Image (cartoon, rainbow, N blue to C red; front, side, top):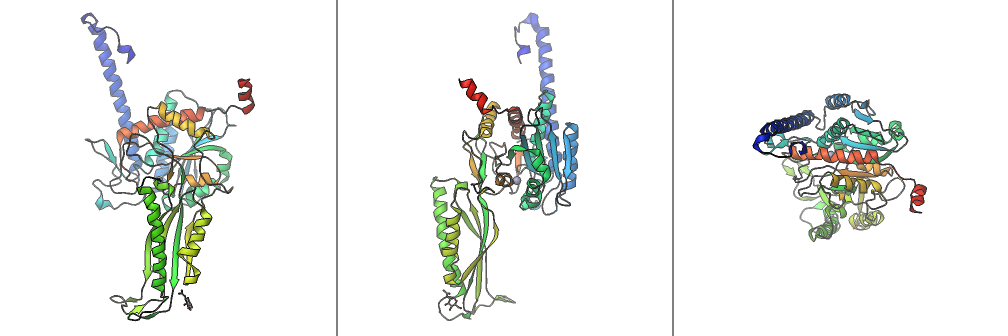
Length: 452
Ligand SMILES: *[C@@H]1O[C@H](CO)[C@@H](O)[C@H](O)[C@H]1NC(C)=O
Ligand SMILES: [Zn+2]
């Protein structure tokens, strides 16, 4: 506090005590402001937007009232009935420049209430640790409201964006996103927004550095089925359905172990390998007490959740599935319950460049550092987020949730975020939004003229 510097001798005690009270006043105001910010966060967390019956309208009302207090233009799009999407706009001085889109989802996953130390929609603030416990505190109501708090600060400072900044609060991310971000990117409203860069969710980091994501693995949900002649449980014969299926399971298991070994050895990150996990096994002939025990069934199937990194060779994995995991020669068939392409609609891997070719990445790194924080090497998100809908359209999208020094508790019991981490994240977004909204691309010819 530079205005409280200078001499602190006895003769100056009046000045000193005046300064002290101003300092206390400033500190008190800052503390008051922080507690107002935290209580707004708690209010949002207290709205029960858990799938499968999220209270979307209450969330919409809350966000709209926040937008009103900030003088942001707001509209509610009901692209699917009962699933409102709230779109806010902070108009930029140059509407011809591509806009910045800050995306977040309003829904959260369900919780097993009895396994939580504090009810998941109480948003309990533990006074000793400063941790705020709530479903959605990490995934991702924190981010949605941090965007708004950052804009509040920027507005208070008199900042005016050059580029238009949009905020979308989308439904249904936790059940796939087709009726949320999926419908949004297909809408006329979205096309008119002329989006140039999207920020969406990331993951907390247990270290000091934030994490950022430039792509994500695509879910391939595979069911393999085997058939074989049924027979007596006492008879040994070849080509039974369970034998045929087990051969596949063994092959898939070896593949899984090899991929996992790369992660265990530190050669690849989790998001860089193809993960395969068996999620169901189905066979047998039911009986009143369980299963018929002396009959070999004629059908057997298994389901696998496969996650494919955008860098993987899609065609060779398809070939592997058809020839080794479910070969017709072994009387096996397969079906995908879901199969998201690793490519965008132009046939290129759906990843956002994180080198010098993408100025938004450099600006993100720079603005995080400016806010006295750091970000690690960009990663592939191990699961799915709404960011894929934007990347599929060829738009750059970066997954980023400013939570450092925080255990990863997304979808887990006792999900929490520390209030100081939350407040710090607001400063980080203030820096990012300011940088993004101010960025003006230098036309190439002008740049080369400068060089001459
Ligand atoms: C596949 O099914 C056919 C017809 O039921 C059978 O003759 C053949 O032995 C089976 N082959 C395998 C590998 O199960
Ligand atoms: Zn999420």
